[in-house]
Each structure stands twice: as C-alpha cells, then as structure tokens.
Length: 70
Image (spheres, rainbow, N blue to C red):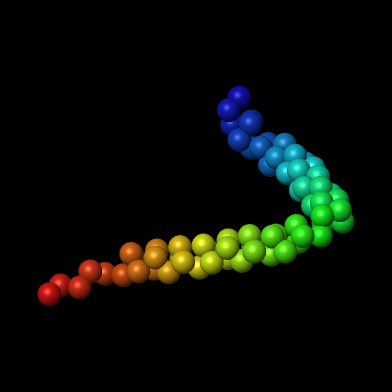
C-alpha cells in the first residue's frame, strides 16, 4: 500500500501544485492591480531573497573548503 502511494504521489501533487500556482498568480495580479506600491515592495523582497541565496552559497562554499594545516 505504501509503495502505491509513493509511486503515485506525483499524480496527486502535480494538480494540487498547479492549482496553488494559478491561485497565487491570480492573487498577485489582483494585488498589483489595486495596490501599486506593492510592486516596489515585491522587488525589494525579491532582491533580499536573491542576496540570501548568494550569501548562503558563499558560506556553504567556504565551509566545504579543506581546513588549512598550520
């Protein structure tokens, strides 16, 4: 029974994720149409997320470097 769920999980998750994505897109379009200042805040939030990913990548790269033996 568990194998059945594991094999067919993609068939269940794909339509759910599609519906969520469409709903979020429509809500975002409605918000941006009625609240123009939200677009500016959305750009700031996107920039902050990009910086977070870049800094996280740099830190993980530095952690993966071999330790220097003095």
